Amino acid sequence: PEFTKNYGPAQARWRKPGPQMILTLADRINVDRARSWLIGDKALDIQAAQAAGLGGAILIDETTDLARARAQLKDLVGA
Image (tube, rainbow, N blue to C red; front, side, top):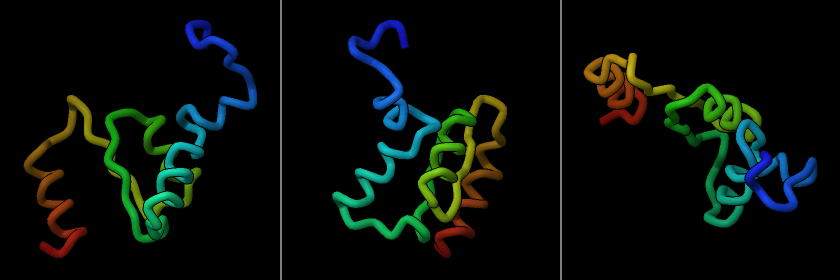
């Protein structure tokens, strides 16, 4: 972006929907990406999760029925 000094194609992978942020963190903290989920508030978050090979992603934004989202998350984690 225009506001990021020295930003270019080599840095694009670090910005969503590029997966590098997720990949780097997962490696650093030894996360099983296939068993991990990302909760995001933008479509770019979901795209980044898919590009990083995460097991799933959930979009929660101003249109989300939060009671339904909580129930779905509870089902996912088996709580």
